[in-house]
Image (cartoon, rainbow, N blue to C red; front, side, top):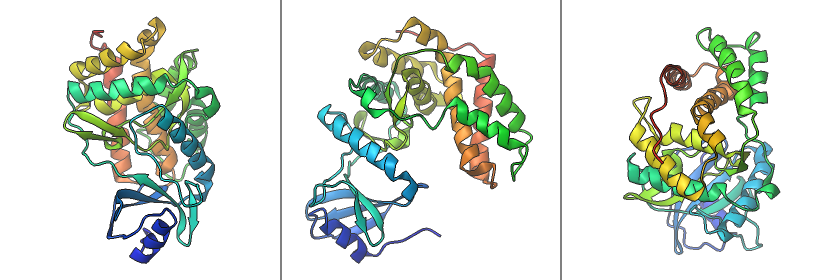
Length: 312
């Protein structure tokens, strides 16, 4: 059952952040790890977040440190408020709470202008100079994929249309994704619903919960999956708009360009692994299974066709 807060609980939490005059708290869609409210106070609009999974506290502190560094880097995202005691994560009677700026805007339409905006912002992020201080492995990685394969035989739910494919594709990709490529901070989950636009102008890339250190080409592959597919087929105009603007800020190496088609596959494969791990191999979920089948078909099409010519 989804946890619900009453207005007094949220008011008490706001008081710890020097936010007064709480007028309303509007529930937003919740993820696996968070409970989110858009709140209106005398000081304006904010996002009130309750962190539900205590096991994620270490990762939350990692995200806090990264956002504080990105704030000095002037990166477009939603930043956290400090509490009266100077903390960004506080204890309340309903769990650990953070409050973020609330950025007004909307999800973008997919067009060359919006895709180009995303590309420029991510290229700057991927050039973040102090990335060595933020070592954290991507949850999408080859070890996790291999670990999943070992669980298939005894998994509570069997998917004969998925498991053999997943094993074959994992073994196919293994050698390519372990090559030595440029690394740095990546957002790792840059999809339209994690971005805020006003018209065609980017306001913020939000939700750094999947932020990590990885090959920068993984950021490109994942974002192309998020922004450059229409009806499950890659759109060459959108892909070229993304790569052109990204390359102007962080030029890709020749090896990255050669491996790009495989990293687009790897990002899609990684999403499949996430859905299987949380929690398809344990419990049937039609919506998740539909997404897995869509991603499988996407990769099968990619493997049969040449990537559209890249125009830098």
